[in-house]
Length: 262
View 1 (cartoon, rainbow, N blue to C red):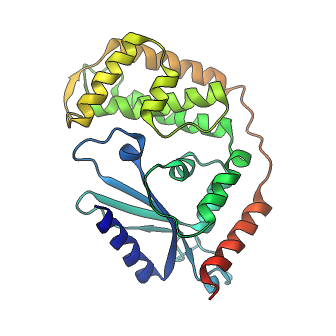
View 2: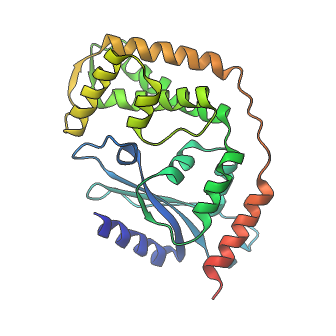
View 3: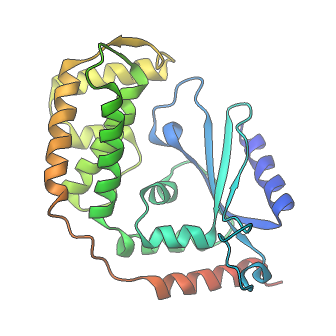
């Protein structure tokens, strides 16, 4: 699949006259619990030629889109963000972007931009913003199965991962790891619960993720308890971080120069 991914990135560069700065795998493959029929969720950052940015309408306004998306084809889902969009979201401690930068599956990193963003990630990281994101994701996904007699196996993992990520942030005030196994080992101490989740994980990886089965009381109790605790902690976390705008402006200018200077 890597050959098809690289071909898609080169095609995007040619069609849109951009340069791909960074491309990685996101979603279940990056988290470590793909099934045999999981999509390849490729996410990338790109930059236009300098003259595109030197106009009265900035990228992201009107017809000048700041996102490139390709229709899903043969399990390949490819989409990316313009660098200006990415840096504005990075300034807000955007969790999906922080996850992309932490991905162990990197398809392309041709320039310095992603590494510079990693170096700055500690200064932009907002525990409050990230906990809020993961907590809302966990709550919304849990609400979709709450009270149901039968639940699709994969649904539990789209609740567990954000809950464990938020729990990591609450306890360590740090960016959570992408690996689900790492989060599970660090954040769940109950052996019986770990065994249940481990069994579900093995079955998901084996391709049983769409099976609808009776809900699991032990897991439901854990999720309800953790979500309630996260809601309580969310009230006391500060959103304040230093304003990195000037550093990000400089990173943007450096990137344009690095990419497009002959």
